[in-house]
Length: 231
Image 1 (spheres, rainbow, N blue to C red):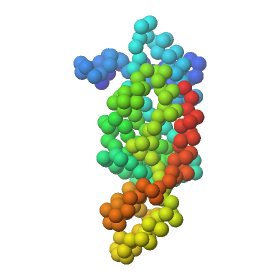
Image 2: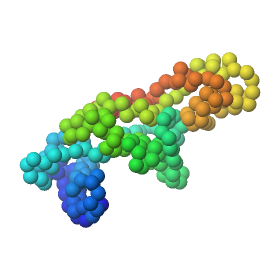
Image 3: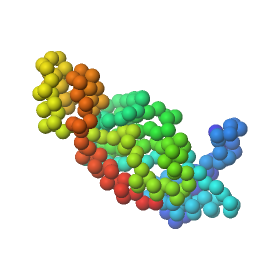
Image 4: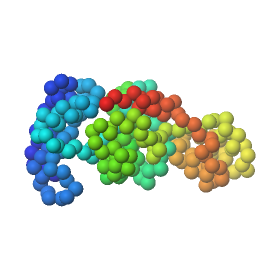
């Protein structure tokens, strides 16, 4: 979308940035330039963004946040763990890649939000939310200083990582008549993804899965990491 690129580093924090400008297309939804700053060296802060923007542009600049990648790097949990326990209202889910290098997507690339889960390194799994303009605007995140609201933003409403309370699940299955669905669920509940198991309970057994759920340990960890966001 742009013809020119200026790379650089924030003088104080050494985080890299890229300034793209020179619009190739005169679409009204494309801003005259796009500034991207990455938190590669230190946690990115509002002060850093303001310092870079003020050093590149003249006074009177109006900055608008249009895209945020909200990431969590987690140790001690596998890609399969997150994949199995994902509970989402996304209309589209996709899994790509080969064993050990898979990425799971909830929602499409141009949707207001998208969740990505992938194996970043041998021991680290990255859980990443891509939040686009429509989602951010609905949450009243538009200016640089508004990003501090990510600390309390309920990004887990569209997608979270849940697990069944096994005692409640067993008790619920005991109440339904014997049959193919009951036998299959009793034999291998942990082999099914959360979504498949919830669907089977609701449509095959007539059981509302919501009362049987609880937050997974990983979900508690992600939420505590969110509480520690600095800006």
